[in-house]
Length: 136
Picture 1 (cartoon, rainbow, N blue to C red):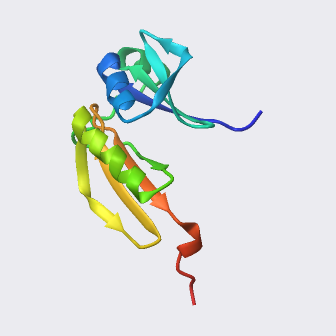
Picture 2 (picture 1 turned 90 degrees about the horizontal axis):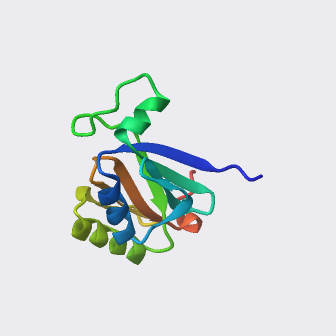
């Protein structure tokens, strides 16, 4: 079995989160979807479990991060082009997400970031590894 990554994120309103990420072009795995959560498909082996806060709390004894004042992590997703970065960011704004920072263009990498409806921090980027500056 190939290694898979499952990010687990607490959400306040599961249906609103599903709608938000659907508008960004993502889909969900129905095998892992019920009233307590859903499995957002990010890539071939990369997923985010969007879990209703009460259900999320059953996995930890710690408090859920207050995303209005703290950052728990930044989930960075690569896409196939600069245009795709901008396309997703346009969809973020239309779906009710909040942009964070200006676009960053390093020549070989272009990135933009946003907060989803629950304040989770996401970054969308395109990187041309053949253009990474060589040291020396």
